[in-house]
Length: 300
Image (cartoon, rainbow, N blue to C red; front, side, top):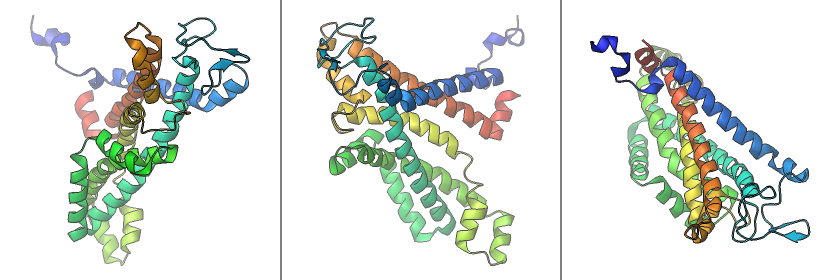
């Protein structure tokens, strides 16, 4: 039997199947929306009595037993201090969304602006920014975030600033390269000949044309930022200690892992992994839909 009669022998990614691409992107959307709803509604659930306060280690007047295994009372068990792991895992999604959205929006704004400016104006400004961004790109994201976190300290805004530093070069490179290619188009030259100011050309003619890859970068960077935030929390450089955060919880759980206390590590780690997978699936699906050349090649 020839290879043509054996379609399973054809070497292609599962994401190159249009129906599978739609399904996996839909799955990513569902996962991300569930986490978003949980993050938004977690304070309401606590007010209704469905969740314990993740910052205290008692339920009403009774203190929680440290390292209690999962049960009907504590679905995900308790940690070494008696905190309810389910409550801390749920509120950890709220902390992750809060910091990561701020970080990605900040890095997007700065990176896109610098990329447009550098690509359009060129010259020494372009060379200086290219050198700076290339230097930053050579360093691992976590190392950049750790370095900045040491300087500014803990806090939600400080963690967002530390994360954003690592992702500005990614937006800058994509937008700058698109701007360099598009500014030579006839419609840009026509606008220049009619006396349009550089700001008008950047905002009206270039910005919308170079933004097609930004949604893909946004979701993929958000997925990566969740892991980087967890790394900061694991090292004790992320959010304040009283804030429920997955990386910090994983750091505290290491002491009990060797004695068979698995739930304090598994549930925060699984939640973090699932959220990263959801955002990554959205990014991969968006990449295929937004890029017409890739879509035409994979769907033919």
